[in-house]
Image (spheres, one colour):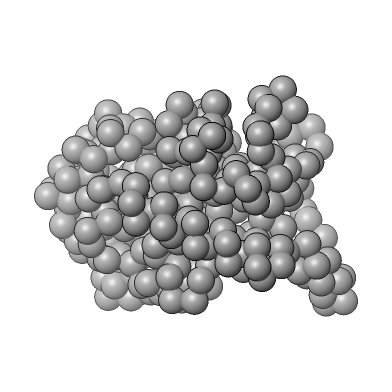
Length: 285
């Protein structure tokens, strides 16, 4: 995936993704898939749905959610797995919204082991939104090197300037306010709310899509089922445990339910998974 022509900075994740062997992937929040025409040749205006149409769509999505017993089984197993196997990552030792944002932007298109040293270096150089906002964007891009995809430090710098100008240097926790920033889409907003503010906010990145689709759906193209998957992600979060649940499902997708050769025999979900046993020829999601 290249940077491409970025059209809308407040998009659903998944439009720009890059699969890696460890499955730990972030998606750019910049260009929505359904803002392009069928030929993929540029943005088109999407008609607004009427209120009854939106209500019918929500009703149809809700009808596709798993029963409570299945949701509880998934929740219990995932949280137990995460307690034992969750990764020790530096951004999990802080609730600072600025640190969380920096980590999330860095993890877009970049492997975790490359992000960790640069995360520490970047925060040492720019320890707050104010310091980052005051820095020349050219210096920020030099500090960012060699992570690549230089639209990311530019967007991060823009978010810092906007945060200082509009909110006095403190990132808001309101979903609509977060989505008003250029460069913060639905996934990043959910990650900030969940990991910085401990809210039960849903997330949907490549790993989460893969896990939820394999366990609960197992048919059709996941990319064409974003509304259903967002509703599923939100419905599965145990009350008050959004942080651990979201971190857990990302780790689970990175370490067990991987894109290639998932560890099905050791998977705690195999008895409830619609895709088990996984066959790459027929279930290659």
